Amino acid sequence: MAKILTLSSGKGPLRHGDENLGRIIFLGVTEQMENFNFYAPTKMLFGRGKVTELPQEMKPFGSRVLLVYGGGSIKKNGIYDTVAGLLRKEGFALFELGGVTPNPRIEAVRCGVSLAWENHVDMVLAVGGGSAVDCAKAIAAGACYEGDPWELVKDAAKIRTALPVFTVLTMSATGSEMNPTAVISNPETKEKQGVHSGFLYPKASVLDPTYLYTLPAGQTAAGVADIMSHIFEGYFKRTEDAYVQDKFAEGILKACIKWGPVALTEPEDYSARANIMWAASMALNGLCGCGKAGKWSCHAMGHQLGAYYDITHGVALAIVTPAWMRYILSEDTVDKFVDYAVNVWGFPRETDRFALANMGIDATEQFFLDCGLPSRLSELGIDDSDFEAMAKAAVPYADLDTQAYVPLHEEDVVNIYRACL
Ligand code: NZQ
Ligand code: ZN
Image (tube, rainbow, N blue to C red; front, side, top):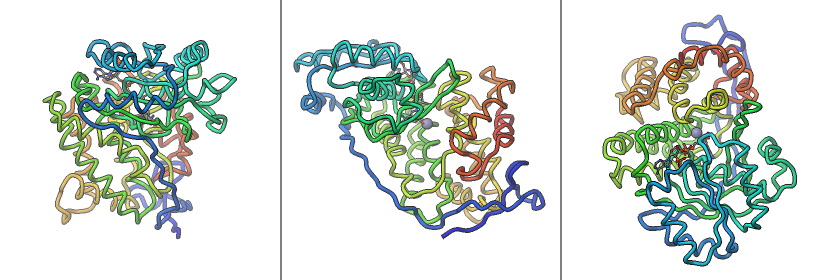
């Protein structure tokens, strides 16, 4: 079933009280859940010491492993020694690609593919956060492809198979440990691109909450913002009857709000780390987005900031999200924001709808501030010089003008970026 909403197309979304601005656009708003497949094949090994079960999960796939990790945190905190020691003891041959940067680059993927070929590896093991995991996934696909791996990032249909991928997670944010996505950056073309393929699901992932104890506060906070954004992107959608998904979503948001601040003040609080870790995986394994129509808005805008300025993914989202929420608040969306304010933040329902919606948005912004996250692009030294170019890339990235919860055109995206200055 579909209905017609009134929204503008060139001058920003129709605002409360701006009744003459809009023209009618058929949005194909669905009131009923779309058909979907839910598939989450990754075996999750969750809890203290669960890494000891990793070798037995890997053994059926061979013995030659490409170990992919970041800039050295796993060497400082001992996780490298634990994992490498365990695997060597079980007879695995390890080859290594270290130094993978946040916002992992295609060049690192190319290096990994060469290593995989030279050493005839059977599988790829990421030990790290989303960047190491995404790089490992792209290498796994690239190792089974004759052309340049950037072609796979640009066109997932070219991924016909991939080496098996395993992960040992040290940072909770992206959900990459349980999903079929890799996000890779190409500094030469100023692109940051997500690729989704069923061949990229990790076979098994180790989630030991104690591995998060050394995560710096800034990364912990950015991770929480990323998790919440994954939920927002699915929660604020056109499908109206996905009650089960929305209750999962509200529960995960409440977990972030409850446990994020605890993880920040008590980095070695097991319950806080465990809840955030599980929240991250559940936020982006398909569960909350099942059957909901449309594409994501804030990630499309956030990825351009990553591509142009190489900023931390969760920081970009913490800045963009409240501005986006304020921009799309209108008569058509206000009831969803009221649900959010009441069910997630606990504000009483009887207040004026727009006041209530704004209270929920203000609470979101304040939460990110309280977590120590930047709230303005200017704090990161970013001005408006690239806004037009970024908006030009953001709109087609996720068909924002036709597929977003509230359609956004280039001018709207520029306006949202400006509101972030
Ligand atoms: O590189 P090292 O030295 O390991 O340090 C990392 C890095 O500097 C550090 N870190 C990680 N675990 C640590 C630790 N430091 C101390 N102790 C630990 N236990 O944290 C920093 C950030 O790591 P990174 O892996 O970059 O973070 P995150 O997990 O947030 O991944 C971000 C990347 O994932 C993409 C983002 O765009 C970004 O490129 N995303 C991937 C998605 C997916 N695959 O589904 C979806 C997301 O929306 C996102 O786009
Ligand atoms: Zn994200």
